[in-house]
Length: 102
Image (cartoon, rainbow, N blue to C red; front, side, top):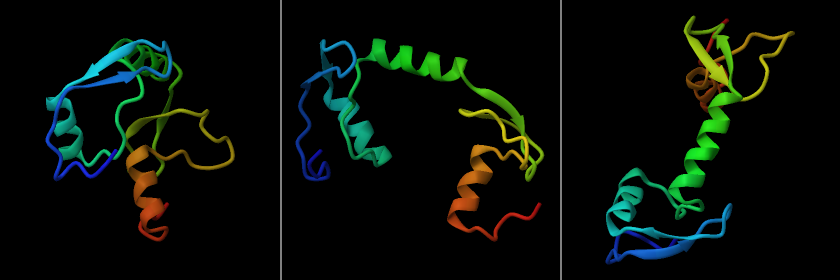
């Protein structure tokens, strides 16, 4: 997506990469993407996006974070030989490996 800061937003037609149907990406949605800092236009229509999210949520594994003591979810099975960590703690760990203590 080109630099959205100086763009005049207009509705665009986009082809869904899953079902190949054409969907409308509205000017308001483009403004939202800019506000959130998203760099790419959506690749799936609303229906396919909902299907993908539903499948993702059905395949989640529930864990108890070994760092913050909160419940969380993972896309992969929790490790048996290591402490499971939630997404929030994982992001902290990636940013600063010494920020979390077990």
